[in-house]
Image 1 (tube, rainbow, N blue to C red):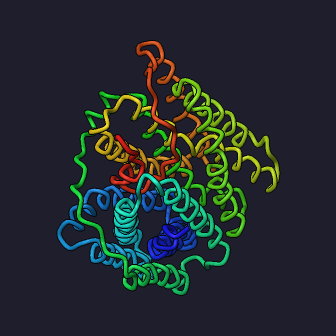
Image 2: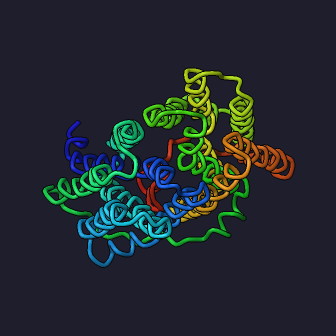
Image 3: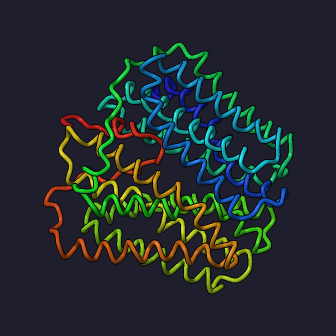
Length: 405
């Protein structure tokens, strides 16, 4: 308990960052519709977020090396505040895309700083408690951020100012903490092609996770509006998807530690394809049915990244594992950058049903690829333990290191 109390300032900062950034995406989608943005413009806002996220992941360790953890966090939090407040100055979609890039960089930079700080505090004796507390805080704040959509008025000065206030509040715990900032660590090098050669299926899995999760989180508010949902119902829709993903981590991890992870990946994609098809065909009528279906979708779709990363780590040596996971985050971001725009174009051309057809098609590709890899390569004889991995920074893997790694 003492270690969690000592990390309270970091956890509180994460909560405020998540409340700000987590609500900004769906609020932008609803605001864009209120301002008569096209679906493709709204999709580009989501793509811009992940472009900024990728830039922030690369820049954050280098900035911390120049100015330190606390000042680095302040820089990224300031970018997040500008990104939120700037929405109130114009209704130009292109300017909003730039602002969303700032917000995406804020998320990556703030999480990189916090995770680096936690890594320095974690020891072999308390690592499990640190990671457990961090996961609970991150998931809980993310769920709360989605539910905020029910009380935020789209395209409102007050709404965007509230999110900027949350981002500003994230500065206070770190500014007041008496905890000594950790020593600066060398940022991991990016070797995306090396990761692709080491584990093609692992890379494919995280890329599909980026494609499908980015489409769900950034474009499903448009889907909800076209299906006649209110803002409150859209918030519940998004939150239930995240909740499903949180619930399934333990049972999916149990399966991934006992069976061929390629089969687990393919099984998750088959289940995600089945749920996506059912949603498209209207097999779950009414708002209650839609809520049940999206909870099921979260149960089978959200663990995809963690299972893919675990599979890739099975082939890595201890001295390359941090660089491998940085490369996996890179491939996730590449899939996530392209996806919201492509999904929004499909919705613009074919209507709301196209969203889950698009997501299901991505899972078909992963099913086929997993089957092919199972035929050309044997499963690894030794496997790393499965762990739930938030998709937050290039440096997160250092928190998972165990004695002897």
